[in-house]
Structure formats: C-alpha cells, structure tokens
Image 1 (cartoon, helix red, strand yellow):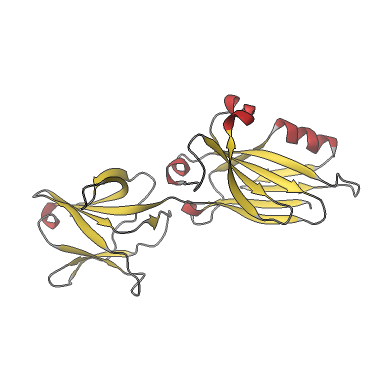
Image 2 (cartoon, one colour):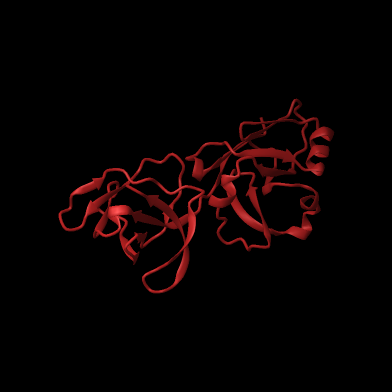
Length: 240
C-alpha cells in the first residue's frame, strides 16, 4: 500500500459522501506504466504497488466532483481567490494543504463538468501516505426569523451547548409581521448536528421552543444588520 487517503466534508459531519474521484489523464498513464493498482470507492483513494521496484517518486493528480449539490453552497476555501482552482496538496509525509491554482494551467477543467477541487499526491515511496483530506464547511451568521404571535414579543435565544461562552443574538429587524434575530459571530453549518439554540421570553426567561432548527445548505438569505450593513446569513424561519 502506497497511498490510503480518505475524503470527507465538515458539513456532513466527517462523512465521505458527496464526492466522486477521477484520475487525470497523466495520472492514468503513470498508474498503467508503473502497474499500480488504484482503488477509488466511498470517498477513498488507495494506491497499491504489486511489485517492489516501483517508481521511487511520483505525483498523482485527481479531479474531485461534487455528487451532492449542497456541498457547493456550504464550502469555503479560505485564502483561495474566486478565479483560482482549489487543490488539496498531500505531501509525502501525509500533510494536507489547500492551495489555489491558475485555472488556465489545468486545461482539463474546460472539458469537465462539476469538478469541485483537485487532489494532488506527492509520494517518494519511502513510506505509506495515510491521511484524511477534510473539506471545510462555511461559517456564517445564523438568523432566526419569527412570525405569528412571536413577532410582537421580546425574545431571547439561548445557546444550550455553550453556557460558558454562548453565541449572542441581536434583533436586527422587527415589524408587526416578523422579527429577525442574527448571531453576532459566525457559526459552522453542519448537517445533522444536534440543535443548540432555545427560544426564550426575554421578560420571564420562559422557554418557548426547546430546539430551534439548525441552519442548512439551503437557508441562505440577505439581511441587514443593526449597524445598517448588509450581509448573507443562514436564515431559519420559525412559524408557530
């Protein structure tokens, strides 16, 4: 075994779902020439050498496609420009770093649809490369939009998971029909995570809703903050 790499996304709570891995033409030629066996399944890439005299140093490049549309909305590659192509570089020691590449330097992108990022593996065959490439989830401010009789009440959102350092919410918009509360900080968006926020009556601290819904990949909307600036928030609607 030369390479044993797993792909996962933070949004899916560490699951490997949502990815399809395809070797580049150059990589396919290397695998064939060196008689390397490449097994790709369930978000894993494994390369096995059936002989001892394998090429000592080689670089393999794979295209990773998104098979679940939600991953496009919830992924944020920090430090990579909009017009660059993100590539996960895996070193011979198993260290992973996402870097930006000029799209023009990767001509195959022009003929491929749905490519999410690249996976580049640098091996010197001195030892097995074993690691996990974790795709980061987007962190956004969460907003709760309350309608019905909740709209007229003064509400408080309680962070049930972090009593020592709770996430604070501010009411940034209030009308007779709805009220919008937006978090002061950014919160990771993770599918299937346990609900962490409760809705309280600010005057009596009575719990009105024990589990407010979590933000998801389809809940993005524009909102105006209390300082007048506009931003994108992960908005959840609560209608009693």
